Length: 114
Image 1 (cartoon, one colour):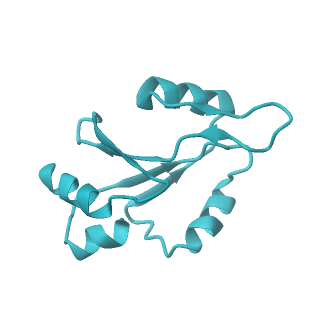
Image 2 (cartoon, one colour):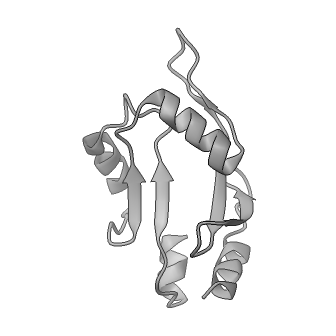
């Protein structure tokens, strides 16, 4: 998506990824992970450093989605969505981030906010 936005010359855009497992996802771990995908850190931010309870509450309050790390299980339960958020912080649309990701639709929707 970041590469497509560059190709389409979309400026003034920020990508934000929230860790759903902040105890494991240190800044070093996220930087290494991002290195697998040739991430441009100029406009893509990987957030971590908060408590598990904080991201669980934040996800429900702001994105109306579940994030839950069960006891005695290393896997975090969470959705895999892309959210299009406007300049005022309002969620405009969400997209599947798991299968058949509608990259072109997302790019076209981003252009409507420019």
